[in-house]
Length: 410
Image (tube, rainbow, N blue to C red; front, side, top):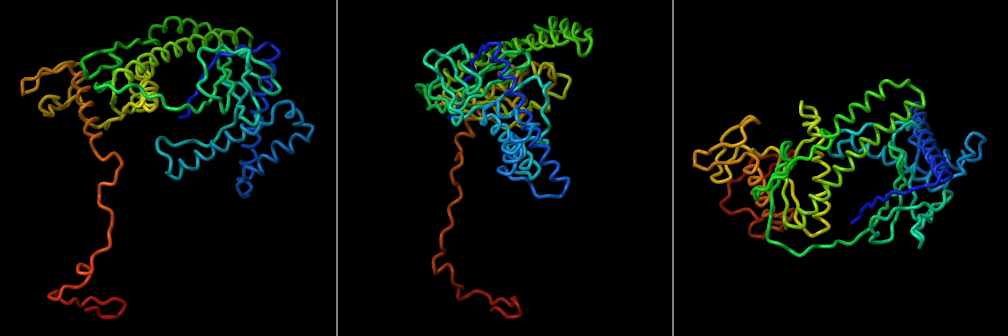
């Protein structure tokens, strides 16, 4: 399994200038490649292949006075910028052809130097190296100081250096790590995700929603107001932008850390985990959009999925259209839709249900029922040649008068 490990790096002022130069060169190559393909399309020419595009915007461009400064950075960084462009085009083509699931993907757009996030990638061809003293050596940049929060499980295959909107630098390593299964346990759990309670488990436990964004709303409001008062293009506005970005980064980091702890605990304590396949995009368009985005359900479900795969646990999503809040988990009776204000209800069978706990139990039951199916195995028998006695015509069969291409068939 491929895993990504992020670490904070602290470049010196000279290294920050080298990184800024690499960010700019990668951005220029990406934009030049995108412009070349757009011009070829407008002129009615054939689609530029990856090799021809690389030769035009990198190899030949370095020999011109306008782009000779591309040789100041590693060539791998420039090649990876074109690789990102090719992936963007490939995703766009598969999306419009219907081969890609999910929302439609827009065509690639030009990158701006004013983008909040800048990134470059080094592969094994760049010969980056983690030194014995803990520093990260990058070609034409130098040895970066890294804050190692944990050890890498294997040698990295690539590293991406990222500068976020808050001005922080990160090194993101891609590592091929072997699965590390946990000892099997008997417990299984269904999870109902919500807003008042972030997660309600089928065993009755409720995890309160931390609401990191709501708690930081007052400070964010003040920083946004200060930003709106600054004159556009001024240095004070740039400083205010960084302050707002740092406040949002603190909220995102707190949410991510809390979800990592919760997802790890759930995977460790349960052999199988089942969650409802929520349409977060659709819920993000409702009046509850701010609370939905503050919860971060999609990120949490993604954590559960990859941790379950690595730890040898079972993970599955149930159908989002199942009436889990309307079905009695005791008798299976569907009692009809209920407004969100109804938090408990009584089934005609006499069972009294908490709305969220009942939904979590129904999710667990649906996940178990789905896991008992063939799970991708061939259910229908494979085709076999018919025996001779079945392939022939019965003696007492009625003759047909159908005509095939003018020939009467008995």
